[in-house]
Length: 307
Ligand code: PSU
Ligand code: MN
Image (cartoon, rainbow, N blue to C red):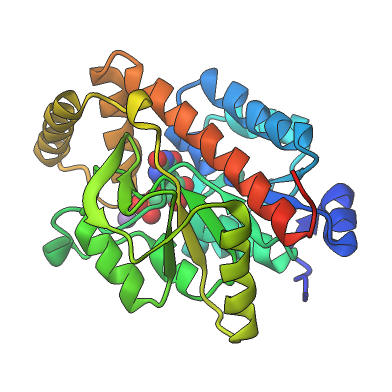
């Protein structure tokens, strides 16, 4: 795998990739812009610990002092988690961050790209970005979607957040040739809720079935991502009626304040977290941990091991 000179890969990640041992990439925008402090650092460390306990090497990705890193140290993760002035970096932002030497959390798009460059084939996130409501006029569609079209990685996500236009997001994933799999479900998850009201095109019932799809994708020479949609357990989801009410209020507030562009996702998430008295935050963390654990099992299956 060609590694660009601008990319730093930790010794641990490089050794695991070279030896074919299981590695899972983790993003950092969830840390820098998706979760409040100090919970963000706990969650980032917890995700790494969960993977290590399962015999999987974590590869947390971010940009420190203009260096894109795959396999951040605990010190670097702590620095990004604490950071004022830490930016949200999607792919288009990487050249500017590298040129200026800034710090940033990488989005799903940027993380997938950098992780793949380092030879990492599996990635866990909370919720993928997608098509925002009103995108027909604002054109606000996350770069995550286009990035996944061109990066052959498997991403575990709890679908996309219900703050988005979920049916439109699935349509775009189809257009972009991203393979979408429901994990033990026929319903595409809505992050805080297990069923967003849309069907998945295909379903798998175990990590080895997901790994088989990845092998088939590679055998076919296809270059797009596989999105493994892993729902929150129904008993752990946010109350459906509360969820709808809070979401409507968050969207109205964003419209009233003229929030747009890359500020939209962090604004809506913060609003939902505050409006539910932190319950949605607990769901967010549980969903993320579930995705990290599943990514570890798929990575182990791809590496030929048993976990
Ligand atoms: N969804 C979440 N939490 C997050 C994000 C998405 O539940 O923190 C972050 C991810 O890093 C994702 C990014 O890649 O937001 C998408 O932002 P945008 O819609 O501006 O592309
Ligand atoms: Mn956007």
